[in-house]
Length: 223
Image (cartoon, rainbow, N blue to C red; front, side):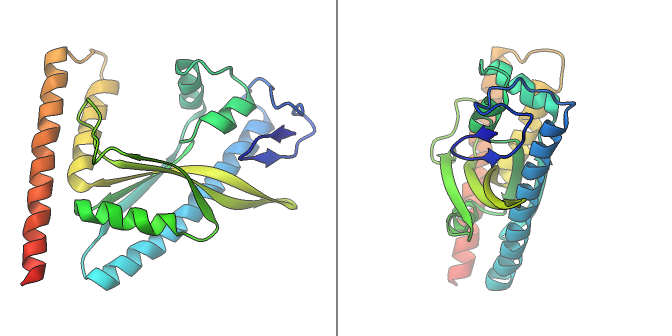
């Protein structure tokens, strides 16, 4: 049995301590991934309903679009190695919070916090971690609001809390983050310090445009 504060999975082939080496080719790993997929689908359904509610209430796309992904086995293992976690199921479950990931892209910055507030009150879920990179951007220039939530998934006779990471951004923030990710991680050459500083500067410019667009919209709505 793998037993942690966030996940209880019955399986006779896993030791009680949970300190079993990861094997991505075994059925235990696939079973775990299926739980994360089900959790992701559950949250996507809730966010889809939220998107429709906001569109009807505000008469514009508060949520512009939603995307999702499940981390690949290689990506999970690489992240665990990078953080110096021993490769076992217990560490995977306890420390890797973004196996199931969802990105919510909003129109304006106000919308990001509007969506955040609703997510906090979603039924059968619990927020376990939040990071506000909008109020406090990363040194790289990255901006966004990150939440790790648990949603309750039925597994045989048990109800299991499974973690899902939600990243909430504006269209402008998403554009910068996607472009920066491609340049930093999808090319063979490492970014120079000069180019990294340029990207951080561009992030500030994009943020100013983002804020200005929001203020214009707010002024129009007040008329």
